[in-house]
Length: 138
Image 1 (cartoon, one colour):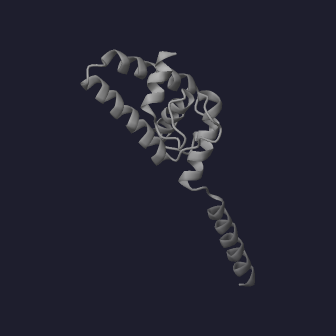
Image 2 (cartoon, rainbow, N blue to C red):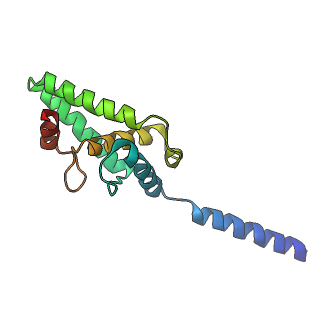
Image 3 (cartoon, rainbow, N blue to C red):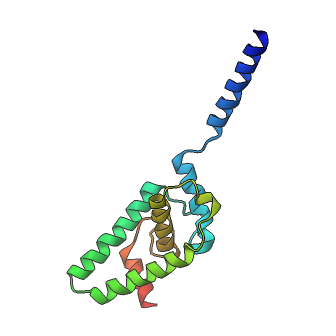
């Protein structure tokens, strides 16, 4: 009986330690973003959460859609092609740090980091359409 209690206590201790060591989703995203920095360029401190990455990508999508509606299809196409190329360059081989993320979360982070690597973000990491237009003019 005593051996059973010791064994049970040991199992519970190990299980509790394993649970305590697991990372939150935001920490996993931060690790992935850091691993993507070398591939996409940009600032090493740019480590968006998945939600922030989705917001950055959504802002780009909205801007491109607005540009098309306003008659700037050519500029929108150039911007899309530029970010797609940067994303493909950064996405060659998924970094180990990104493995715990779902495909959608990884894609959002990869695109957000590509946008940042192009210099199309402001001080707080948000998408900046003026920087995008300036970057396309270079």
